[in-house]
Length: 402
Image (tube, rainbow, N blue to C red; front, side, top):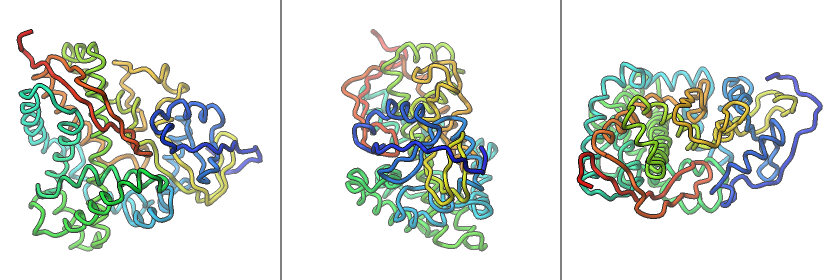
């Protein structure tokens, strides 16, 4: 990727990437954009979109050209709210914000909470297996990672019901202020008000991530507003990717019993299965950057000062990088996927997400013989997060009589 712009024309499209029918099934549209040009200007919202794996990865790495400090959302209004957050910062500010929880999210820090996470997974799965039928989203995927992260932060039980609706609404607000974002605005506001109230030592448990963030305020590394944004950012990032990847994985097990059977026979496939689900579904579709200087993407010129969407989901299905990209392949193990982003803004909580998935799968493998769909799967219309609303499931416990 060069910094010198060329004179080659930029491809332009007036399609609405956030129209409900495209949100419901974005991949045919993303395939067309990927083949149209390395970078396409979407005139309806006045931004460029990158859809090819190598280009998206290179732009994510090049923060000097593709800056987050000018905002990673589409609208100026939401970018104002994000200003000063870890998502909307470049070095050196970004490194200062990220350093606050670096030790907690490092392998040694995660190893210290593995037993706590597994214990919670076992209790939750025991109750669901005893019921035999449950909703894979409402009763498992939207409960397990949210409570894991809330426990680690040290949040009280009262008020946690705001977390998943609030995180979903926040991600929707990264895109255009359309009907979905408007319909969920109350959830966003309720979430942010509650999270602001949590920057009070009297309301959080000692020894958790929240206390670590407040310690950074006391010693001058963060101001109070930055602490609010840091706590909210880690909560939000720690929820939606994991919630929606686990949801997609549960649906896969119900629709593809052969995958679950192979995993039962070979539990070491748990990691590769989670990575392949992340690649295939890419829960967070993408974020924006702003060009600080003239840029060039495979011969396409993008002037300085323009908004550019790095489309993780499109990149993760680029046939130039992944053969047969629309297929779930049990042993592909695509550890280089971009579902967690890449570069300095690669998700700080991705190690936690992988740990959560590993412990949940280990618990399910001990207790579930097979999954079955017990009703129709429902999808949400969030324009930024590919997510499911409901997966009615029936499980056959291990050792149950036919």
